Length: 216
Image 1: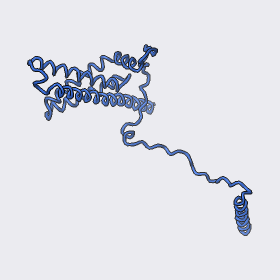
Image 2: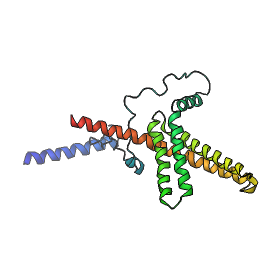
Image 3: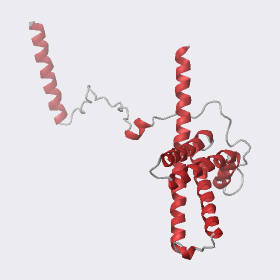
Image 4: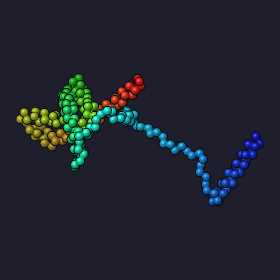
């Protein structure tokens, strides 16, 4: 016991001596022996990441840009046109389905057909992203554009068949403004629905793969 007390006194005396030498500049300051743990803490995702955890790309799928020539000007535009050409059947059929749902939603609002139409419209946009796995948001936005374009043609044809011009309804300015709002509405919904459809497919494939590996 006395040896331990003697060692403690010697250690304190040595510490005081070194402190005096450091204060006079005769010794460099000692690095702290107990360095704080500087390992970065794991980042906590926000609400969006908790609702939509990261999903990997679809496995076993071919390159969506196979056969595309990257040389030449305006590559981003040509790349998107190339993908749209390869997925034309998806966004055209999904656009027609979304149009049917939108018409039911517009003309039967508050009724059961209106509710079913709303689900059909959103389901078509989500399906566009599901089957347009090459670029879900692009395919979804193209679906929304098709929905808007066919709906616009139907409205114009209806006005023309009745012999009415734009001045007899909203006026040219109001017609253009209403058309721009409709376009942004459908393209925006298509973009969001396409993103969710593509994410849903990747996530479902990931969960199915994990379940198969767990059963082995």
